[in-house]
Amino acid sequence: MDNDNSTTMVCGPDGCDISATGPRPTETTRSGTRTDVEPAGTRIDIVSDAICPWCYIGKRQLERALATLAAEGQTFQVHWNPFQLNPDMPKEGRDRAAYRAWKFGGAEKSAALDRRITDAAAAVGLAFRTDLMTRTPNTIDAHRLIWFASQNGPFPAQVQQRQDAAMEAVFRAYFIEGRDIGDPAVLADCAVQAGLPRQTVEDFLSGELATNEMRAADQAARTAGVSGVPSFFLDGYSLFSGAMPAETIAAALRRGQAVLRDRQTA
Image 1 (cartoon, rainbow, N blue to C red):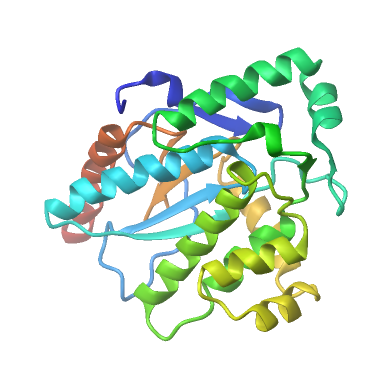
Image 2 (cartoon, rainbow, N blue to C red):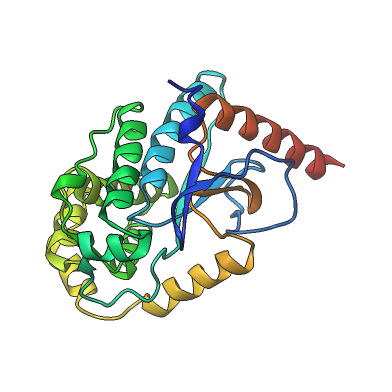
């Protein structure tokens, strides 16, 4: 299924049927910063939204690509970064059916988009349940949780795994379980699945810590040229956008890593 070009799409403010931007030479558009403990060409930053179906599909394709590259002796660190497809969404969210009918010009168009996305998800082993989704949430607290997961852990690898687990739990809650990920109780459940203590997360979500930072990171991504998600960066340099097939992602990472390491030794 990796050669199915129907999955090379992104979500943007106007919907999730936007053509992706294919792999390109590593250029100067930057998002994220490599740390001193990460070798050149090993930090992957993904700009995404928790309600972006192509972001979840792209996550699965990336996981396949990373498994291929690991077998070749190449390892990477994945970091998730915020983007809000609906930045003006009320805190409590909206009724999904009514909102999407308004946004996409009718219930029929919305249903057609759901069918296309569900088929693409099935191709990578994800059983989307759009029939269970009743709310389109505000995702700022989901992004705060994903950030919070990245702040907890004594070792970089552990932090990365915990953030990725939180992202997976949030995606699963929304797309497969049809839960409202704007609800702090749902997000606390996701946090527990990622190995975080419930009470600590509930206390965090009850405040506003990192809210401004998430909005600033969203704006930084837009300033860096991101208009659709998922968008992928290597050491802060733009690679491509969209849920590309796994072999395409692996090839882009090989090329990007080679370019960056050549620059480092030049």
